[in-house]
Length: 116
Figure (cartoon, rainbow, N blue to C red):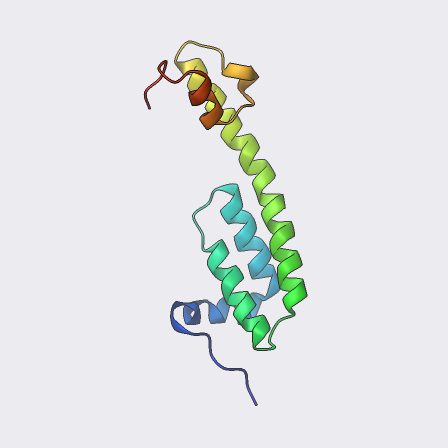
């Protein structure tokens, strides 16, 4: 007996999961957390449905999704921090806290000094 098809919009991701499997989950989740607009969370949900149908291992999907998210988020944060520093310097100022702070913290520390 074959596993049931994916419901709704997830059906469009079925060929990707059938062909690439865990690699699709890792690659798309990592790219999404890096900042590229790809369906990373959607492929993770579709892979979870596949795992529920017995086509993938649910533990492997969870572990791969977590590791890919962490691996993609770190370089994404570094890239965003670098661009944030250059944005402050283009305004003629040094970034608050050496540029390592998040934008929300910068706006709280200097609420009236900038309008974005």
